[in-house]
Length: 447
Image 1: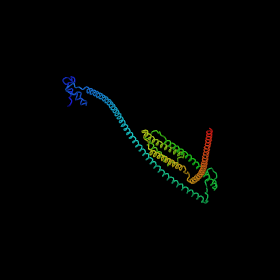
Image 2: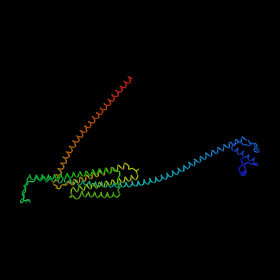
Image 3: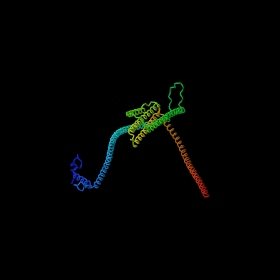
Image 4: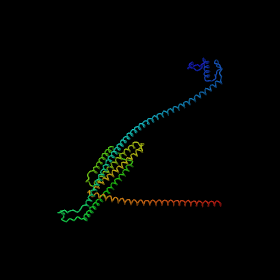
């Protein structure tokens, strides 16, 4: 039988009244049976059949159930508090992770923007490198064309020199083979009224000796001037080398404008055209003035090359300052170093060709008849000088070999002496240790 609903009882009155005693007993028994407790009334019609032991046990069990339910409720409240705190912590963690996600998105966008800027800078640098390579190729073509032109000029001068030499030999042979002819009558006298000397072999040889002396003096003077000029050009070349090393080793370079590259290219072209005009035109210009012009032009070209390298270094430093984590690859650095070495070698070759041309221009004879004599004397002096330098070199080499042999022998002797000293020291130490050991052994034995 199902338990009676509580709505059947009056809410305003008590639970049990005189009229509904049987119903209350029946309800209590049903509730106890539903809770797995034994009924406290044996008969629902008689109130006096109450079992006190069963009632007390049921009341105690109900109290235990109530206490257990209260404990479980407290535990559930604690669990609820823990879960609420965990939920709050999860909410905070979620909000923090959302903030971190936003920051990471912003950082990602910033890195993408930086990557785009670096790509644009890399493209600009690649374009600049391409332009410089094209400029180098153009300059190499110009230098090659000038080299061919210089070679043609040298060959032409050699042919002229050979023709003049052959002509001089022919004149000398014709002069020797010329026979004595008739004297010219009514010879015009000298302006001072003195009588002219007879043309004899002695006077002609004396005049020829004086001519050779003057020619040799002029040749010596020209050689000294060329030596001074060569020393000056060597100083300029050494200065250029030092400055190039300083430029390549320097880490902080001043930033230059982009406009300067065009100015450098135009000024380089203008300087090259000026040098062509200097080398080709105005043969009547003095040697000192030409030397000064050449030195100044070389220095100007070096300054422009230096500014160009500084501009490239400043661009590279700007890229490095923009992103310190980005580093130039080793391959690009080696390519740049190779390109700079090639440019230095080209500058050296250009300076050497200019020196040769200037030397040829200075060695152009004032008189075509004396060119062969000057060249022959110059070649003889060069041969003598080379022989002397070779002798000095051989002596220095022999001295160096003797010094090296003496040094090796001294090093070997020193090594043997050091080994002997070490062996003596070790033997002396071993002897001292043996004496100490024998002394202690005797003392212990006596004790």
